[in-house]
Image 1 (tube, one colour):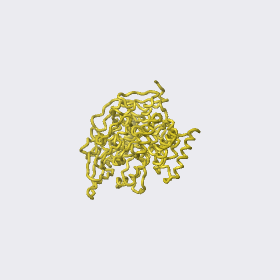
Image 2: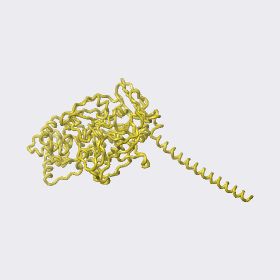
Image 3: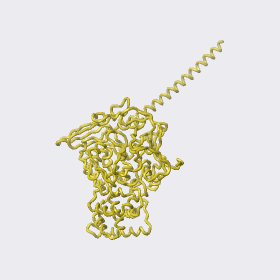
Image 4: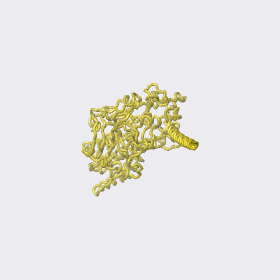
Amino acid sequence: MKMDPSEAGILVETREAALVKFDGSGQPIQRKGWFLKPNESIEERNLGVPFFPVFQRPGPNWVSKLDAKVSFKGWPNPTADWKQWAAKLTPIYKDVWKQAKIFDAIQVSTCRFRKDLVSIWEVLPYWSNETNTFAFPFGEASITLEDTMVLGGFSPIGFCVREVGLDKELYKLKSQLLSHHLAFNKTTAKKACFSLWITHFMKCDDISLEHIAFLSLWLSKYVFPKAPGDVVQRELFPLAILMAQGTCFALGPAVLASLYRDMRLLKELLIRSDKDDILPIFSPFYIVQMWVWEHFISINRNAFPEIIEHDKPWAARWHEVAIGRTLGSRLLCQSPCDFEWRPYAKKSSNWRSPSFYGENGQWIYGDVNEGIAYFAKFLRSCEIVGLDSIELYLPQRVSRHFGYDQDLFGCAYVGAGVSDWVSAWACYTKYEFNYMLYIPPRDYQSDVTYQYYYWWKENISSFCSIEIDVGMRGKKKMRRVSVESGSQEPRLQLDLNNAPSSCGVVGSFEPRGRCNIRIIKGIARARGANRGARLAKNQLIHHANTEASHDAAGEREDKQGRLHDLDNSEHDALE
């Protein structure tokens, strides 16, 4: 179907470019590449240098501080009663849940994910609150709408979670639920806590009301938990009532917004040492942990995740999986060879793989089906709306997550600067099912452009050494590992022909005992982020000197011309 480009969302462009593998192997190859928009081609460099993620080093003793001051209130810990309740209602309402696109998410809520805080602490120092991305030495990465869909089962399409209205009939259901909720104030708990709620409604004679009560608890505990944590939220009753009717809400962007919010809070705690209060994290943070497990091969390879059972979501493979690691047993986040950009594109015999993980690439024009609409949502730069926050979502900075080549990205997106949720949501739903995009094959090996390669090199060198405090038998020792000292991992040649010595990759480092990692500005400070400013300054000085020399040369030529004319006039007078 042909369409007017002005009436559709053009998300991908293809063009010839000099592309190179980011691990430094091989030479640049001029080939056709696929890039997410907005990006910044060579001809458009006058738009400005893309914003580089702000990197702030952690404060002292940050690991022990995080262990003591962070409480993950939203971490799912399904009880036997909850699993029993879900098993009771699944055969009855499975089709309704699939219509509302919450079936997978409910299945995930019955899984238990063991905490591995080491994995979270290792990636946290690389998080940038300004871009909502990780600035790893091998490039930018992030938690995306694809991750919340695959790992959490949350749909990226549907109605806004803030846009909830009930008609008269449905309002009666809300009134019934409120009366039950108020009755819990007369119990010894003085509140509608989760355990009492389950016991009460599992004996309810009204199966429809029981279904709404089930979804109300699910939303309160596993999707949008908030303080005090162990209470069913009345504010979520309208959402539960509409979901019970099969209405689909876009839970994916709302959950992702809560994860971005809490990543920001954790990063602020990490870089400040004057906060003594306990920081409660209410978002479903198990998604961040599974994101680390999925993307870092060294963890993935040794964790032995379970084989996905039939009709189970992808996250079920991590049910009850325990990973025994200590901080510093291996330095993650350093080598491009240890990072898998598209873990969900792998074939799995039992998993219901989405249609956009295909064997062959294809261009999509015009109206798209639901599966392609999911994928299109992953790719659009916008602001995502949560229940209590609005966050920036910039997928063009992490194109390799979706199988595209990475170029310098545009500095802005359509709708930038939006502050109210109505306008932000209008930007998110723009075009809806009308897109023009290329879907890459599942095994496509994406690369980066040469200009992105050099841009990242100039910026990442500002924090390319790691200092580790190792406590061993009561003694403290300080070891410094710079990015040029790795011997176990292949070096990251940031310049294919003449790489600066300060831009390599940290290799394996295996100290014994408890380790505290503190990211600092190391040996590359003189060649780091300030280097770009110095180069720009030198270019301006050179340009000014060149213009001055040209002006001086012009004045000399004019003077010589006037002297020559004077000589000619004197010669004519003598004749």
